[in-house]
Length: 612
Image (cartoon, rainbow, N blue to C red; front, side, top):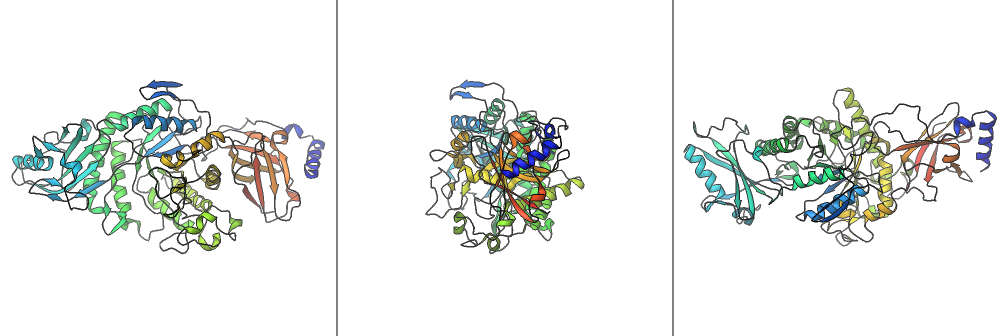
């Protein structure tokens, strides 16, 4: 306290008290959030505005106000057959400031066929798949009917591959290229689509099935009784939320399930083109269609030759279709990072940055890397924490165990995002524009015996985390990302009592600091702290060998600015406090803790290394 009194006395004698004691600063021009526009779920003016303050439908009455805006503003959703569940979920997401949802989707699957009966076999090829056995045309199995129609056009036509694709969506006429050979098939309450495309992947627009015999691939789509995407987009309009539906997931390589199988690129791009053509025709002008999600997961690493990476090859072909059919709508992808030293095929922060560049060049506009804390593949720690024991929850993770952070990991979450932010900036200088988001994992590593504690519905192998851990993840992703999203809403934010979403609602305005930087203001030295809900905050500074931490009331002697900051998420603001750096030892890590006027302290401090 003597330090604060002395500093204030000097400021008053210098006649600059009127400069220092400022509650808000408005003389700087507003800055945009770089790379974020109407297609990317956020803007300097904040989230989209709902169409009404409330609405009523058969599921009840829903409030569209936002009383508790949290730092995480986007969430994954799983498909559900109960549309009222979606309404409740989007209301709850919007209530905590969510403006983006990412929908998990379904995969394209090559299947064996019993050609005698025309039955499509299950994924193991052992018995008929009951889902597709329902598909018949005038009593004839759909695949047999397709073969009959093709051979009627030319006896030399052959079906060489059969694929299935399951979805809860329905499509319009845009799904068809050749209506004479393709069709919607309704059997009772079941809906199917039959698509026919040349084997070479050309998706020939001439629809010439008769001039010569050709080989064809048939895709049988099992669709929903109603169109789930239309319903989600309608809800998006009502709540001011943008939806990223998943593109068709590529088939996996049988020899390595972590890789996409390039043998099926032609059929995958055909299906992708058809689906996106239909999206463009029906939803191209909808603001609630934020973009599309690439659901095939990829590990970021430094590949010796990216052109030989199967999954990147499949990405590039599929992403080209998006650019053609949905111009202006970005592709979102969420790769994962593995920074464990004792596990094979993992990567350092700089190696991950090189992988980030290779991924960006496949045509994606938004890369939201998984932060790795939920799986334990990356740890949440600062550079000055490397010698500390790992968090107790991480000890069960393969390759981590009872060790220090330095022994277990090549770097912490913050190290990886910092290097990827640098890669993003280098790409921009080359003319490649890509946004860097963070996907913070809202779950804990767990063994089969520990999983589901508290039980999280369909997430049987993981247990949910809590708000302090989530706040810490936001802090460590820090100043390097322009948006923070989370995997996933259902069920990690909804299970337990209280649920994680309820914890957020009750504690949404607890301060979260993300960065501290040395910053002079006018003629006075000081410290600028960036983060969420920092107005009227108290800042505590400490370092090794300091007997009494220094506490500064930013509301009394500082400055508060809520102007959006370039490359940071909407909602990040700044406070500045005076600091006499001559009294701070050189080369120490200054611990910066922030607390609200009611005494609630941020879950995680930030650190500033005083270079002297």
